[in-house]
Image 1 (tube, rainbow, N blue to C red):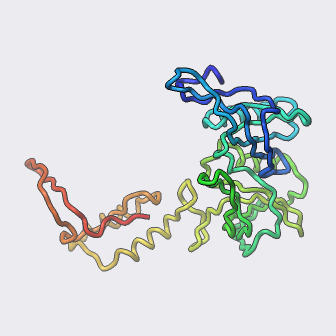
Image 2: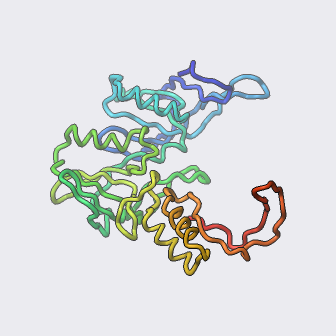
Image 3: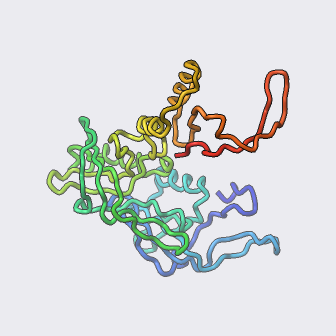
Length: 310
C-alpha cells in the first residue's frame, strides 16, 4: 500500500504499535465481528510539509480503532476489509492488540460513525409491518435512542433520538447460521457504503428469538412503498402526485404541448431531476437578446417563480 501513493498528500499506511494509543474508549460493538474505539495516537500520522519538503508527524490526533474479533490469523475477509478502507482513503495503518492478538484498523476519526451495534428490542416503538415473504418480514419502527452521529464541530458523537428505521426480521434465525452471516455482511461491508440499506445494528425479538437487522428507513411515509432512488430518500409515485398538486389549472392552449409536458414529468427518476412544466410568458422579466440564427433567437431572462426543487 505504501507503494500506491501517487501524490504528496496521500495517506501513508503504516504498522502502528498498540502502545502508541492513549485514552482508548469503546464506542460501539457488534457481537459478531468488530468493536469500534476512539483513541489518541501519540506520534500521529505522517503529513507532507510543503515548506520543508519533507514528511512530519501530526502528533496526538484522535483516531478510531476497528478491532476484528478472533482475527489472530489473517483471512481473506480481513484483507478485503483493509483494501476497502485503503481505497476510500480512510486508513492510517494496522495495529494489533497485545493481549487478544486481534488485528486493528487505525482509521480517520470522521469516517467511523457507521459502526454496527447491538440494539435491545425494547428500544423500538410504533412497530408496523410493511412487507413479508417466506424468509423475512420488514417493519418500520421508531428507535428511541437512535444511532450515533459524528459531529465535526465538537469532534464527538451524539445520538439522533427517535429515528425512524426499518427492521428486517429473519425467520427461524434463533441460531446464527451461514445464511444470517451472509445477509449481515451484505449490509455491513464497506462495498455497500452507498447502498440505501445502511445498517445501524442487530437486535432480537425476545418472544420468537429471531434476529433482526436494524436498517436505515427506505419506505415512504405516505404510501409505505420502498423508495425508488438508490439513496433511499425519494418516492417517485408520491413525488409525481405532489407535482400535480403544486402545478394546477395550467394549459398551454395546445393539446400536443400539454401531452408532451405530462410525458416529460413521468420521466423523473430521482429527486434532483428537473420538473418539466408550462411557464406563462409573464413569468419572465429583464429579457435580453443574446444571439440569433435563421431558426431561433436566444435570450437571457429572470424567471420570477423559479423552478420546482425537491
